[in-house]
Image (cartoon, helix red, strand yellow):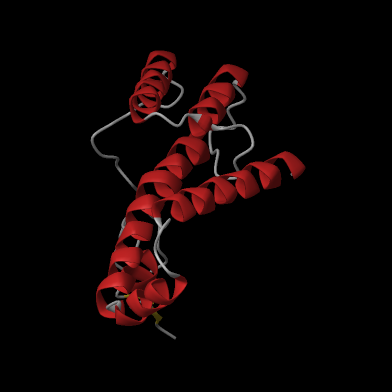
Length: 157
């Protein structure tokens, strides 16, 4: 925890130093004037877009690698406990270079495919048993299952 906090503070200090270096020779009044003239309607959507790209690229994709097979995941339905896989996933999260990270992710995918912990299929057959008094039941395998299936079901008395 302390090491991560130290690294974060160090990164902010370096960023602040770079900004000061780039702004050298510019009067503080000029900086405030330029800031007042900034167009927030462009800045805010650009920041939101940047955050979305980071979130999808970093958090969502990492969560997919982590959640399915990592031993510490609560979504590990196979109950896999493979220290080699865990260390590969944990290590790729620390890589900074895009090329190194892409190689690490491809190695993880190859490792999982070679081990064949869970068979990969194009689709899956599903059988659902529904009591005759459940009316308007329609199976849905999508993420909108609650709206597409359960919201329409009614019980005949």
